[in-house]
Image (cartoon, helix red, strand yellow):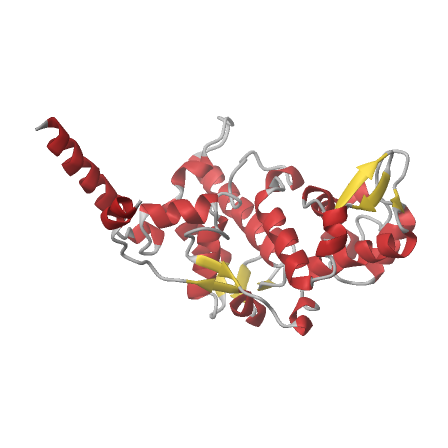
Length: 295
């Protein structure tokens, strides 16, 4: 009797995990788990597609990093400053290519000089290192053996850099918000939302509301001075900045229109490149009990 009861409860739990949930845009708990913990692998509803060679030229962050790789290939290495940063000459040359723009430089507040003052430069070099394309020793960057093989294939190089940007770089490092996980946690769900709704120009709040409805606990913080309203506004801005400005736009996947550079309304539209790269499959009702028996 106990064994029978246990089997019944396990079957109920399996079926419950497989039920579509409205807050998750109709995906099940199992599918959402894949979107959270392995959005680009395994049973995730998201698949990264191979692009045409010309499409890789449309991706700002990819081409910015390839510029640095080109220097390493040409010279055999890239020497950093005594403090371990990209030299000002490299920074200036890279910025002049126009792949990515720094808001404060464009507003005349900062100058193109130091890596430490420009998030787009810090992120580019960090991605090279955490992706395993390069190694650093005694303030000198060189290609790894695996990196030398990877850079010969744009598809492999892009995938490695893109996934590293999504999963291995701490997004909260690049801003002053007190929320560790907002945006990066559940990125796969944001991609599903863009795939589903991004063909029309919509406010960034449209996406943040759906995101926080699905993942309300990512708002948790130790800052007790915030009112519920200021926390909501801060969370919305944090999500928008990290997801759209500093991830999806960097990778050429959204267009952003903003009425004011600082606090104006922000409108989001997915690019043609988004649908060429990202394919999202709808909820699939799986026979999990049969799959378990098969194992």
